[in-house]
Length: 149
Image (cartoon, rainbow, N blue to C red):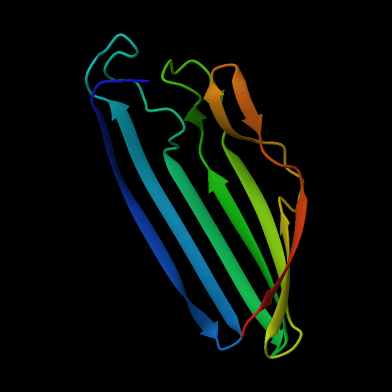
């Protein structure tokens, strides 16, 4: 949908590192302001751009229990956003917790289990307009195996 001119301003910060050789941490934060700057038939100037939360934050940590076994946990937060250019319906803010386990089966084969939305939080992840809103996925478990040659 053509919305005229829009402007996005913001700040994004990221930090990652190792607290010890076995313990890694990663954090991120974004502050965003996206607004319509020029009126069109679709939206007047001053409305917020849909699906752009003002704030997003994440924190992830991984600890290697042994050289072959590691575990991680993370938290993701997103502030509220509008579902469409009408700015009448809102996707509420949400926080989701994820976890993972890492296994080195052989020097060439690694396995990983991810649990997304560990606490089975109810939230809305996206929208196509004011009345077509997508719920976030319930707790989801995914397993992967990687081979290197």
